[in-house]
Image (cartoon, rainbow, N blue to C red; front, side, top):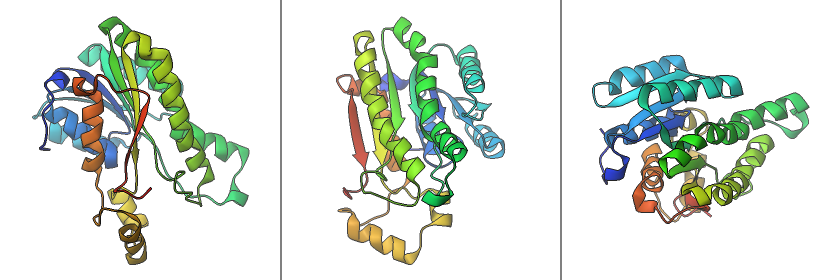
Amino acid sequence: MPTGAIYPSLKDRTVVVTGGGSGIGESIVRHFVAQGAKVGFLDINREASEALVAELSSQGSVHFEHCDLRDIAALRAAIANIRAAFGPITILVNNAAHDERHKLEDVTPEYWDDRVHVNLRHQFFAAQAVVDDMKAAGGGAIINLGSTSWMIGLGGMPAYTASKSAVLGLTRSLARDLGPFNIRVCSVVPGWIMTQRQIDLWLTPEAEARVMESQCLKRKLYPEDIAKPVLFFASDEASGCTNQAYVVDGGWI
């Protein structure tokens, strides 16, 4: 089980995590379960997600919904199923994304729209699906996962970086609209996090050397480095925090 700070305000809260079956999302799910929260997560990878539930079910309340987040009707239905299982949702973590590489000259309008749907659109509609629960509860927390990729001018995936830059605008807009209801909206912005996918596909000795040169901290960052600040922003310890983007990149930018 994850170790670290315990936030009493997270115990028994119903949490939804998108993309919770692997990588950063998996770590977020594990950390919320360790806090005693009731955690529902959505993912397109059924096998990995069911294995995670099988592992965690003896440790706390966890529920998986298979969902392709590009299908907004399916997203809404999945969130409704989590609500039916665990009660009103007062914490949402919009984590799901996919940093697929693509060349500028290869991008079609259809591919562009698909990347926006995978990396941005569902964040808005997931928030829309839980906001009434939060209003009725007298408050809540939404944490949107961004990316430093656009901040450092990373090339090779313009649809991804455009979508992730828009997460900041979405966060600030929702924070302004939902603040009167005591609903806080922040963004946690990861740098290069060593998920298994990143390690398998892109972590070469040359790339690791670039990380060590660019970061102030001379170590690789891992999913738990993101899960821990997500817990903080979801908890009552962050009750005065909204409309913020918190960068976790080892001091790269």
